[in-house]
Amino acid sequence: MGDYLVKPIDRRIRYLFRFHKLIEDLHQQQSYLKREQTRVEEDVKEAKLQIQTQVIEDYVDEWLTNVENALKDVQNLDSRVEGNKRCLHWCPNWCWRYQLGKEIEKKTVYISKLVEDSHFERIGHRAELPGLEFFTSKDILASKSSTAAFNKIMEALKDDKVNMTGAWGMGGVGKTTLVKEVGKKTKDLGCFRKVIEVVVSQKSIIENIQDKIADFLDLEFKKKTKEGRAGELWLRLENEEKVLIILDDMWNEVHLKEIGIPLNENGKGCKIILTTRVMKVCESMECQVIIPMNVLESDEAWALFRMKANLNERVSRDILEEAEKVSEECKGLPVAIVTLAAALKKTKTREGWEVARKKLESSRLVEIGNIGEEEKNAYLCIKMSYDYLKKETTKRCFLWCGLYPEDHSIEVEDLVRYAWCLELFGKADSIGEVRIQVLEAIDYLKDSCLLLEDGDGGRYGP
Image (cartoon, rainbow, N blue to C red):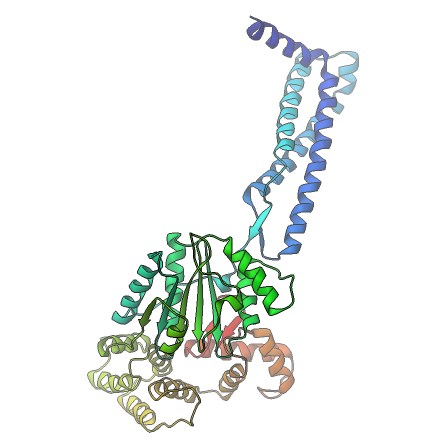
């Protein structure tokens, strides 16, 4: 009877005769909430300062929004109390006091709950950088070789006994595209909690590899030596679950312990996929599964070339016959096919295609170290694509990009400053004029498949 009769009556009487106490309780909770609001906002600022790519958790943003609205509601209630203060003091409006007292108590309880909910386990998390995401290759035909290799790698990743998988093949055959597809697929399926891609390149500098992996893990090294950093990296990766590391474009054997990479054991540590042009690298790295990457078959190569060169059914047979001969000179290498087809896609006559074929057949390259006879076709096709660039300014832009280190991401504004200072495009009246010419050259090089956008707005790579 007390619960059903006494308490409701007591609460209603409190709205009328303890009205001022209700206001005091509201203001006390208001001060507590303001204090917690300040603390959380400072935590958010600190999180963003420590990591510029920090993403604040949705529940934190929602709490801050609710706090702001609640504090505005308190101000509105105070205004209503002040507006009727004289009336409340001398001749109380009992109906109005009852209604307002009820609202005040309800708001006090709500604010008290916000204060209780202000202690978050985590304020934010590191955002995934656009330049580090895995994107599906557009307009690239899946060949029999790449499809078979993809399936073998996926099977190897599912096998608990396999920690190291190697994919090898000549330059331009599509190894990097393949492992990016694997990375994206495993990420979509949730096979691994983290997928880390590192371009190793010829020099194989251990410190550079360590830095790239640490960036993915949001790890700041405390030690300065290579060995000390390896120890820190090892401890971090050893405690991570389901980590896939892709070591792309390896030219020599590297010791994983020197880098600080522990192999998968009892669900902890890492699984490795490496790509290389030399099968011996796979063997020296003791890959349990070694997968060869072959060139495209003739029908696949021709289909890709036609697609990239815009050779549809409306094109005459004599042009198609000459274009197919040009395609054959690419020797089934995807990188050569894509680059050359993009350069020749505006060729509309049989004579134009014939000239292109003869140029390609008669082309010769100066000896390039570490490049086999089979791979020279890719370089010949790229050289011819360069020769087909119409504007000298575009050629200068491409050559300047070629001066950057291998696998380097090039800032557009850096190119603009260099072009302005060195007068690469001749004398210009302003840096804005140079910027227009640089952006025009970049767009043309992208259309010619000689320059790739790396996904991080304003960055490109040759």
